Image 1 (tube, one colour):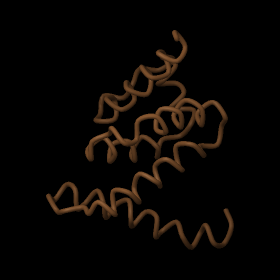
Image 2: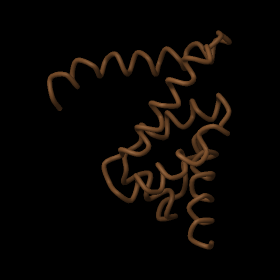
Image 3: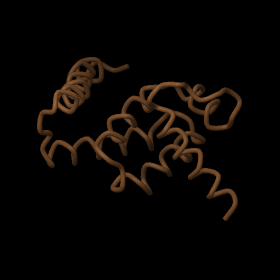
Image 4: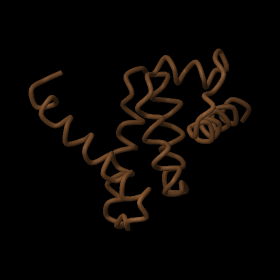
Length: 119
């Protein structure tokens, strides 16, 4: 990781945690903040590190980011914090999906992938 990335990482973590805190505490997250969050999520989803996860996760997010609820956006942020091998294992069915709140978004991504394969 470069020096700039190392310096910006704490800022990125602060922004992610700050948005989650406001949402959970019932605070108002402005439309501008949600727009920034969507752009950040779209970038993270399409720049995962492997072409397969870029295509699967990034494809879903690109196609559906505007239809996701605020809670789903926050959950997607948690999903994007997971490693590519874990995501691909869950989406391919090699491992069962986690029993936490991320299963809903993971199922949406998996269904999107399956629909692409059957069309």
